[in-house]
Figure 1 (spheres, one colour):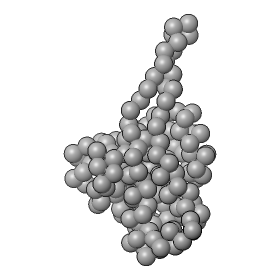
Figure 2: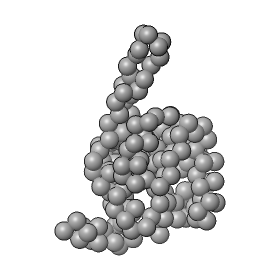
Figure 3: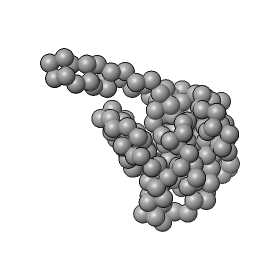
Figure 4: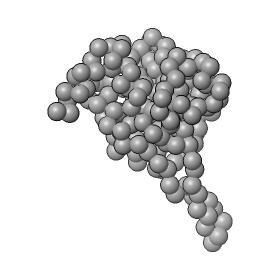
Length: 170
């Protein structure tokens, strides 16, 4: 059973596009927009409802990520991470969860080490070639367009509890 789902953000939970604004007075740039898919949020909300853990592990810092994670109840948020594999390893130890009970979804080279720490790796349709080659499951959806939801549904179907997911919303 998958108990922990580790999520990259840019290119996975979001479409990977970054929008910035520049303030000349402060001589500083600000990230102002990040797009998320509500279908992913609904899947994560159910994932949390059934007592599973979710973690954002991203190389970027963003208050937008913090806000979205809180909004949909993501358990753990790690930003500014250089070594995602190490982060997953430490989280597994903290939660006392084995690699066989962990999955990850990522789209680019900095997600490879995260994939090395889990038993099930998912890649959005628009991932890099290298990730596509090492992922256990190549998703039909693009990052930011329901890929995380598709991964969650895949797990629920593999664990034969997908029908419970459907019934929950009726």
